[in-house]
Length: 109
Image 1 (cartoon, rainbow, N blue to C red):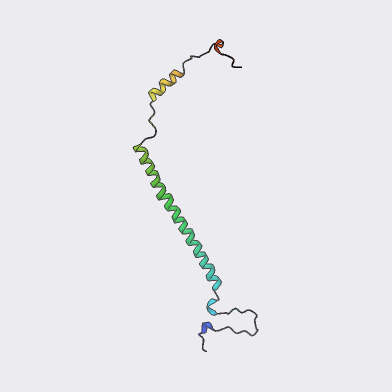
Image 2 (cartoon, rainbow, N blue to C red):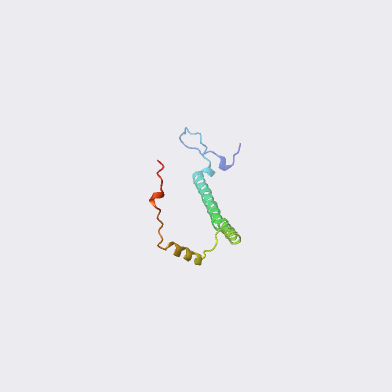
């Protein structure tokens, strides 16, 4: 039976106990395996970075604009009226002290 040249076994002078077939096309197998694993790792990192970029730049901005639109249509806080604030501070700053007479306090015990 005639086999193609890449399927022929390598003959050595010594008999080996290993049953591994040494094909000429598989001599760089470890290099190909490492390169493919690195390629998959790089692709995973790129996909993660693209997803992070889209989340940060698109979804966060959309959420913030919806929040701003919501606060413009229905404000949850009213603007500060400084004239009333000044009146309140002036009323509190008066030196009126309230003292209660001690005769009206009853001992509950």
